[in-house]
Amino acid sequence: MRTERRGLLPDRADGRRRAHRGGDGAPAEAPVVDDRLFLEDVRFFGRHGITTAEQTIGAWFSVDVEITLDLSAAARTDSLGETIDYGAVARRIVEIGMRGRVNLLERLAGLIADELLRETRAGQVRVRVRKLTPPLEGLTGTPGVELTRRR
Image (cartoon, rainbow, N blue to C red):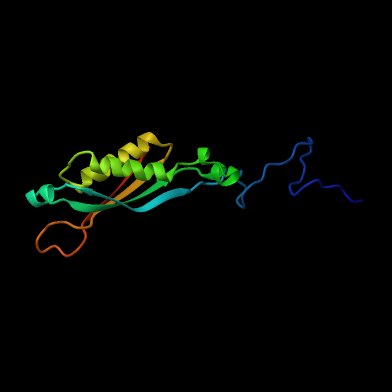
């Protein structure tokens, strides 16, 4: 005698469907979401720094941001309302970077990270700030800092 199966999971004796379990017998958990929206190389000119040259001559800055949030709805619906507008994020980075002067790259990155975390529904924000043209004699590299902030 053949029993009728209505799906991939066998029925329980009481007529209810069995919950899917992982290989170890534990109930299946919701999938882990590890979605990220990112922008790279958002540039602005600023007078951030400690030295007189940094404050008067200024420098070009480059900012990369990585925003961690659930993008499942945006991937499903193709709706901007279900994600974060990266154009608005870029404008916000430039606004923060140009609205005053700070001494340290750490402070600038912290301001950007904290404001993006506050203004979006992100679970985590990672910000990398680089000073592209530091007016510092003898410096041949590109100084930078990376900060991560979580809810």
